[in-house]
Image (cartoon, rainbow, N blue to C red):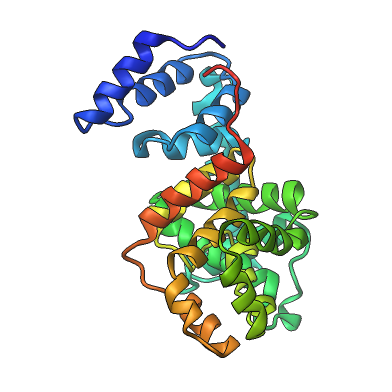
Length: 294
């Protein structure tokens, strides 16, 4: 696609005077007027730019297949989703899996298990396993982002299902990718983490299986999830990489693996927006950006 010099000038001007993203917001509004919506272009936009908060949930629902590409069907499908949600909740109440006092995240877990046909018998219920804890972590984070309970459940379910289907085979390889890019950016830190035995003990479950739920505050997390939902799990590697780079001096001074893990699991929260911004820049640097027209 030939670049528009006038558009580039306007974007540079808006950014210079403090209105970064004005042109991108207008571009997204144009895309959202298409009927049917072009999923490839919406994915490309989400990969290249941060989604405006006022449109984020709507775009997520479209990209995750909760709403269809045909905009004139959105209200009808939303009604079906709400009805299905209520039917599942009522069924679980009748079977006494949930009650009015059940935390909403555990309600979502039972709903997901019922729809996935893995709901345990009431007599066999046990404390959540690793997969359930991953689901609950994502649920707690999504609950902070999405106010409506119906939207929240469908986003959690679709996000988890898409992630497992699309990226399940890639997850075991992400730690090696992290080592590779760390060797490119800061080989001394990589050598130190290997020397103290911390590398295999990094909180990969928190980072990769849970897509940083429980690690980053929601304001930063949703920008990472923009990229995951639009088709990239590689962004998770670069967020992990930027966390290590940002706290290089602290980590270089830690001589025990448990100290490294303890710090990373309780890292300061005030710098996470900057960390995510730098991670996205690194992701673009190594992986490029989509070239489809937006």
